Each structure stands twice: as structure tokens, then as C-alpha cells.
Length: 127
Image (cartoon, rainbow, N blue to C red):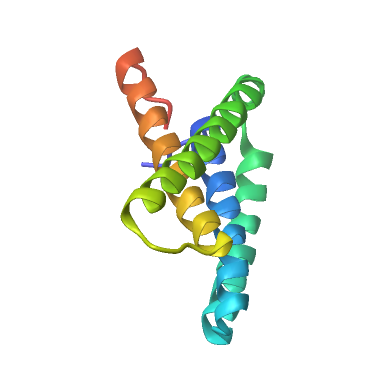
């Protein structure tokens, strides 16, 4: 069964690109060249797949995308705040690189859960 591209899926792929980009400073600061190379290759692959999905996206789904991208931005901001609070309470010191990576991870997770919950609660399976 082939599923059609959806706005939710595209917003998640864009969030994944943001997450991968957010890990780059951490790997640069830590001198993890092999991991940096792998994440850049993965970034390129996900970017190509995201572009292909964008091209296949129906007009109705493209109209829904700006609202989902606003939600993604909100979730990424909430993830950064949440991780900042978590690390303020639970750890002694935190670098901005680690906060950026952890905040983006939490933000993308929140966005994925919110998107899943929205589709499930509407009763419509969009892909």
C-alpha cells in the first residue's frame, strides 16, 4: 500500500532537518568528526526526500502546511524551554550546544505527538 504525502509528514521531516542541524554545533565543539560526517550525509538524504515529498504534496495539503510549521516552531520553542528548565534543576552545567540539541529533540517529539494526537482525534487518517 502506497500512502500519499501529507502535510504532517512533511512538517515532521522539516523538524528532523532542524534537529539534525541543531546537533552540528555539538559535534563540532566535541571534535566528533566521524559523527559530524554521518549527520551531514543523513541531512542530505532527508533533505532530498523532503523535497520529493514537497513536490508530491497535494494543493490542499500545502495549504495546511503553514499552520503545521507554526506548531513546529511552537514545539521547538517549548522543547528548548523545557530542556532549559530540566537541566537547570537536574544538572550542574550545560553548554548551549547540548541545550540546542536536547531542546530540538524534545520539540520534535512534542510536535510528532501533537500531530499524531490531532489526526487520531479527528478520526481521519491522512497518511
